Length: 365
Ligand SMILES: Cc1ncc(COP(=O)(O)O)c(C=O)c1O
Image (tube, rainbow, N blue to C red; front, side, top):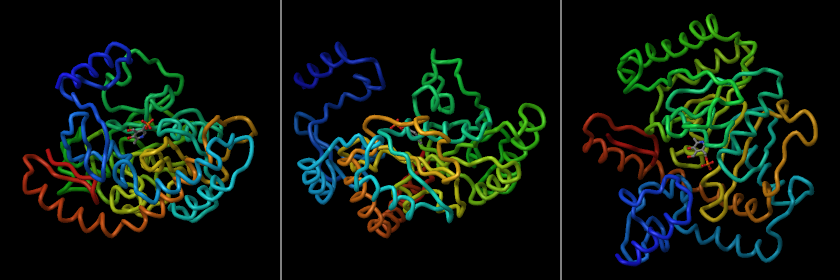
C-alpha cells in the first residue's frame, strides 16, 4: 500500500491533471495477462473494460501479435510512411478496404489515435467545400480541438476549450432509454427514429442551417462514453436516406465499438448501411502501439498533396501489428457472439433500470 501511495503521490506531483483519480481509481498497474491486470503489489483485477477498448485480444497482447512485433521491430519500425512507401502500410490499407462495409472504391489514412482519425475525417468532408458538421448529443469523438467540437458527452471535456473553429450542430441521438421526447424506443422504435430524423430534416434544416452547407454527419454506431447506447435497428438506414437526399457524407466513428467488440468487425454491420467514412483506433494497435485509421470513399480524398500528413502514421511496426490484429479478431467473432449471448443474459438478470449492448459491449444500469 505504501508503494502504491508513493507512486500516486509522485505521479500527481509530476503529471498533468487528466482523468486519473487517486480516490476512485488508485490502481498502479504493473502487468497484464489475458483478461487479468495486476497492480504493483500483486493484486489481481478482472478487466471488464478491455483496457478502454484497446486490449480486445487481451493483455499485454495476443502471443502472435507480440511475435510479429518482435520480428518487425528488428527490421523497421519508423518508416516516414507519409513521405515514402512500405509494404505493411500498403497491406493493412488494402485489408481494411476489403474488410470494411462499402461496396465502392475506398482508401485509408493512418494516424496514431482515435482523435486523429476523426480529425482526418473532418478535413476529408470539409474538402467538399461545405462548412458545417452534425454530431449527436452524448457522443464522444476525441479531445483535440476539431474532434472536441464534435464531442458532446460531458461539459467538462469541452471546458475552457471553446469557442471552436469548426461549426457543429448537435442533435439528439436515438437513445431508446432516455431521449428528449420521453419515447420508449424499445417499444416504439419507429416513433423514436422519426422524431430524430424530423428534428434534423425539419427543425435543423428548415430553421438553422441549409443542408447544402453541411459537410458531414458523424455518429457512433453504438455510443460508447455516452453509456453503450444501441439505437433502434432501422435508424441508420433512415439516416442514410436523409443524408442521401442532401448528398451529405456519413462518418461512422468506430474507434471504440469497431474491431470485434460488438460481435462484428465493424459495429455498423449490425445495421446494414455503408458509411462514407469509418474511423478506427484503439484495438488496431493490439495493445502494443497507438494507431489510428480513417477509411474513406476514394472520391473524398484530400484534394492536394500536403493538405494532410503526419510523422508516425503508417509506420511499419504499427502496420504489421494491425495486420495480425485484424486477422485474429476476425477469427474471434463466433466466440464473441457466443460468450456475449451468455454474458448478456446474465447481466440482464442483474439489471435495475436497463441492460443493453451487442456482442461483448454490454452494460447494465
Ligand atoms: C468513439 C470514440 N472516438 C474517438 C475517441 C478518441 O480516441 P483517442 O483517445 O485515441 O484519441 C474515443 C476514445 O475513447 C472514442 O470512444
